[in-house]
Image (cartoon, rainbow, N blue to C red; front, side, top):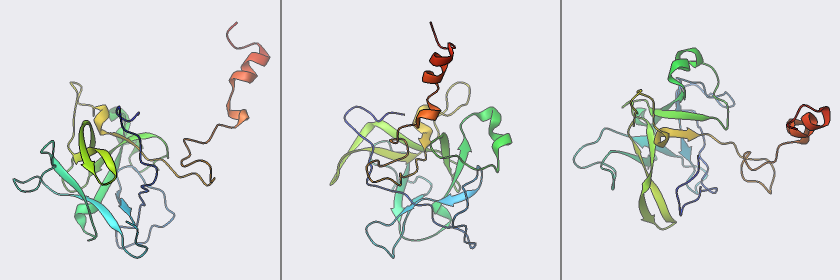
Length: 190
């Protein structure tokens, strides 16, 4: 998934996955179909801002697309719950309850309204931080009732190294690059 023209992914904004139910699930993996919260610290160590959404009304909707608004709030509630869904609809039932792997494409659904998180790559908002794309909650489906690429997200883990921001920036080790091995064994293209 590449960002739209004139935009780049924000590497300084890091979402945390805090415990959102009564039980403390620190260190446990996110699972497909289970509820979780997305939050940021917002510059304060003791205050968490949660990604939240509610049904669209005449007074509350996203600014450009007029769809269901997604916003940050400091109040923990059922409106902060999200679910990860496997990208392939035919395999969703089989993956239900299995751990979500990092750096893989998925669809994020709002638990309360059952609408997918969407990034409108052609609707821009001017903020203090520059030009940003609008994020809302709406499920775009194609003719086969599969989510469109607007609804596809990637949960990327941070890199423990100082020089790379994410694990996607880390170069693969030589052992994983099989092209050199295949050429040495004579299996590669001639």
